[in-house]
Every structure is written in structure tokens, then in C-alpha cells.
Image (cartoon, rainbow, N blue to C red):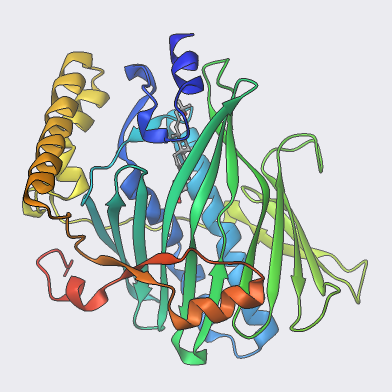
Length: 369
Ligand code: HC3
């Protein structure tokens, strides 16, 4: 009950939720950007498809594939959704996937704001010329025993071969099962993917019993450039199977994606002792180990050390009249391609957006060889 009350008073900032230790995870939220890239073959697939329409469908398929990892993996592994560690400003998470057919796919994720929490991320594969970058923050509210989370930010996918951008909006979600002590994420409302070539896809999400009796359901419509009527519908479970039907051949439904047939590739990280002190796994090592053995005192002591150090740093910066310099992301006024594609999507992107400084990252000690 104390925990539920603290949720109710969290006033929009998920970092201010005080969760009891048994609901704490030893993983920092800065790691969650990994879910965008953990299926490298699907991530690079659109770059090999010449036909625009098929390419759009491949982007949609990859996007659907990222949802299972993003929103159900902790629930499957840990039995229920836990509260991630609240990243400190400047916290970094760097890794790579090495796969036989796709070569190296790199992940860089950095906490660019602490209050409110915002994470900047980039995932790229140079063999296929595919780059995703974006940023992500959350605004939370508590109503009817449910924690509701609206995501701010977006993701922007770039396919070098076609000089094409895909503007991706992020789903709202809520946490169900809180009262029973078994929290899990359910997506809600709608998102979209808008391509600079004019193709669009809109997605609607729902939980148990709305579209069907099943959890994690969605319905998507894919539109050709300059057409108001959709060309395809895709529907099913984003964590399971979905089917596609073309409007022209109405009854001809076929399998679009089956999550059970695709495996997640292991993310390679530097060994902890080779990581910089601001890298997530190294910085939170003692807390994570204490979470694992359920040592509440150590969790508290080690978390407080990090929080106090951060408070002290902010104080020093304030006194010196300087602001923390982000390592590999910078906040810039809306850039060209984003503006164009956002206009097509009919949305106003944030005035200032976080963008990846790839050159700086590649010249740094944090680059993963
Ligand atoms: C809401 C959430 C933190 C935010 C997580 C985000 C939106 C982060 C960006 C990723 O790309 C996608 C993503 C997946 C899961 C989201 C988390 C689920 C639970 C967590 C809450 C802050 C935890 C609240 C604690 C408790 C016990 C109620 O689960």
C-alpha cells in the first residue's frame, strides 16, 4: 500500500517513484535502448529491398519485432516488471552485436537528462548503411490502480542506400497487475512510422479483451504515398503472431511476423574492468550484485553513494556556472530531414532534438573494438 501511495504521488517523473527493494531491478534504464538493435538481421533487412512498398513492410516488421524485447522481456525473465535503476546524467551504455551475415551493429546509449529522465541512443550497421537514432523520456501518472506512462521523443531510421528516413513515434503504456504484485506492461493508444518517400503506417495497441481476448494486440494500416485509403492491414499480437492482408485481395491473409521464430542476438560489452567509470554496468556493479542477493542494506548504501556524488557534481557545476557536457549527444534545433518527414507525418517534432555525435564517439576511448 505504501508503494501504491508513492506511485500516486510520483507527479509525472518516474525517477521519483520509490519502489520497495523487492521490486527493484539491477539494470539501469539506459540499457533499454538495446531492444532496438538486438535482431540485427531484421534491423538491416529493409536496406536490401529495392521495392519501396516491400521495404516499408520490412521496416514495419522490424519495428513490431522490437516491441517484444522492449516491453515483455523482463516480465518473461524475472516473472514481473521491476523498477529499473534511475540513470545518472552522463551514464553510458555501449555494446555491439557481431553476427555472421550482418557483421557489426553498434549500440550507444547515454543519459542526456536526469530530471526529467531522457536517454539518447544510436544503433548503426555500416555494412548495410542503416542507422537509427533517437531519444526517449517518460511522463507518468497514476489512475485507477494503474501506472500510465506517456513516452516523449522519437526514433529516426536512416537507410543510406536509398537516402531515406523513417520517423517513428513511441507508444504510451500502462502497468497492469500492480495490485496483485505481478506488474507487466501493456501498450495503448497509437503510434506511426512515416517514411520520407511518402509511405505511412499507423498502429493501434490494445490489451486483453478489446480487439480480441488476447494481450499485447495491435492493428496496423499501411498507406501508399498520397493515398488516404490503406493498402494493407496487419494485426495480431506484437509479442506473438501477426497476419497481413492486402485491401485489394481482401481474404488473402498471410503470416506477417511470428516472434517465436526469431531469436535475440547476444549483446557484446567490454569487460567491466575495461569500462569507464561512467559506464552503466561498472557504475552500478555493487548495486546490481546487491539486488541479485537481495541485500537491502548494501542496495541502499551503494545507491546513495552514486546519488550523493551526483548531487555534489550538480552543486559544483551550479557554483561554477557551467552545465554538464553530454558526451556523444547534443541538443540541436530541428534538423532538415526530420522536419521534412515530420511534416509528412503531420506532427510537430520537439523544437530541440537530441542528436548523436558519431565522430566524437568513434574517436573516443568508449568505442567498442
Ligand atoms: C515504464 C518503465 C520505465 C520506462 C520503460 C521504457 C518506456 C523505456 C524506453 C524503452 O525503449 C521502452 C521501455 C520499456 C519499459 C518501460 C518501463 C516498464 C516499467 C518502468 C516503470 C518506471 C517501473 C515502475 C515500477 C513497477 C514496479 C510499477 O513496475
